Length: 140
Image (tube, rainbow, N blue to C red):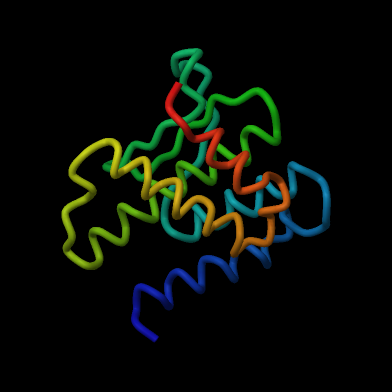
């Protein structure tokens, strides 16, 4: 297995083993599962209510931080997954020397694709249907 894939698998394993994320059905536990995955890949997640009201989350690549501005647990889980998709896309681009998605539409598409993959791998895709996921990530 390639080093990139090994670190990704280790992050999934760490997230699923995180004691904060054990149990079923409780949204806070599911959020912690995504949160632990992001942390295992070297980024931090924090609440940031200074973000504009219409911004649910934002990633700061240079700082390795995901800022979250979401009032509901279900919404927070989806925003963290989407922003984690940005982070995973960024790490992949660094690892393989690819330019990091040259335009915003491509970056958003990649974040959506990786975000859905993260939800699936962490066994929490039942939070939302694929159609709801796509709709929640469409531009306003």
